[in-house]
Length: 389
Image (tube, rainbow, N blue to C red; front, top):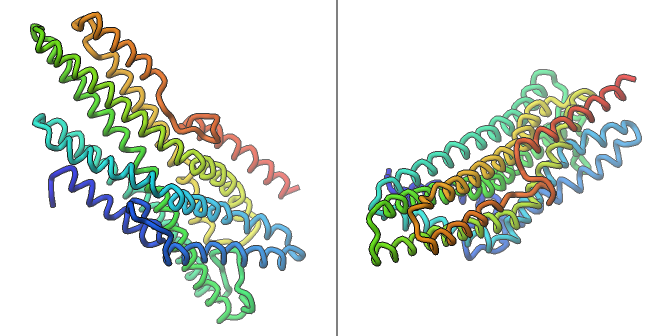
């Protein structure tokens, strides 16, 4: 295995692109276009929505609560559709940012200072761990939904379905019809899990790279502070000015990167958080009112979905704080008056950091997740009281 950060990053991205390619949305490829695999994925989404609507219309007269139970998984389909649209319509931005990150890793690993390689390796390891943990939650949830329904159906002889739609012309109450419907549900669950994971990978990869920018800025500032301690002559004074300009340019690159991420992700994040909160409420209600055995594993998927992006938003806020701290850490009084004015300009810019906005209003953070959790609890309790009246 290569120890070069750029090669490790490419290995991680090969895995990311493999998962994305399985659903036909390898948006990291500059030449990506809507293809046959993308069409198949879209077809499964349309099939799910069509069959679910037909099934709800058929079952609504006998059991109106079936509508609420069916909507529990429709929120995840909404998330998947949203992520598919982001991948297809923002493919150019996704590939441009990917190429930019590849260039950063390739350029800075060549720096003579070994600390650059160290911070790049540390960020690669952090990215690998987060992707593994999120992937593990999807594997547990998807396998759990499939296995619990299959095992429960086999043991009891009664058909338990993973989803809330029936196949046209097939009676789910017969043994063959039940197992055939369950098989189609299992395929849909696997495709849905891959699609959700691929969509999460995009925002995980890019938001975690904010720490690469912050760590490199820290090293640039440390190099500057060491340089200005030397007795300044005209040549060293010009070098100091060039270093300050380099720091300012790097901060501008970071600000542009976050602005592009916000433009690309704010709708994705808003839909993810809102639909996850709704799904949690409806899933709890469905588990209380029906025998949806797969729902217990499904909730293990949607709860991390709610908090994952909020945690990433908080990490981005911490990264912005680190960058602002490094700006204040510049040896201000060792600089000339002209250079001090330049540093003051950078300090003003660093105090207006870019953040990902939830619904375009509140910043994406753990504090926002706590507020949403309170609302989920209140609505769930209200529905439970209605249920047991």
